Amino acid sequence: MFLRSHSKPLIRLLLPICLTLVLLVLVVYAVHSTQRQMAAESLRLTEESVRRAAVQCYALEGAYAMDLQYLIDHYGIRPDTNRFIIHYQFVGDNILPDITVIPQRQLL
Image (tube, rainbow, N blue to C red; front, side, top):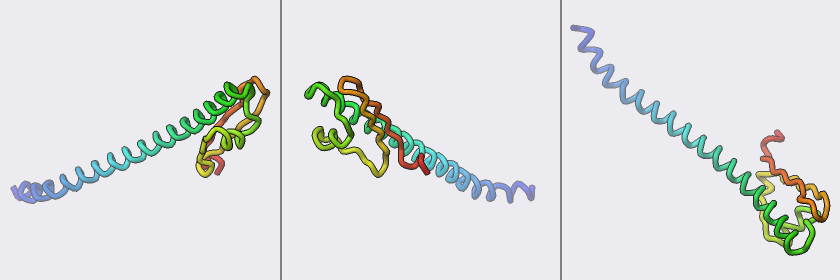
């Protein structure tokens, strides 16, 4: 009987603390997961915008741009060069360039 009377206040104290810790861990995991998904989506959108600008250049001018700077200057793309490295390899006037976008942090 002595143990029962002391265990109930202890459980009443520990239960809210444990539930709070579990909720905190779940929130941190959800935030981290969302940030990872947003970074992946941003990378995909950056690559897609460069590719679309290259195709638009080909459709309007009859040849692909020789470099990324031409697309930036003439087709209005604004890639975030602080977050991404964009590899734009011109292959030929009528061959889609090799376009690769990688996050800056992968190099570290």
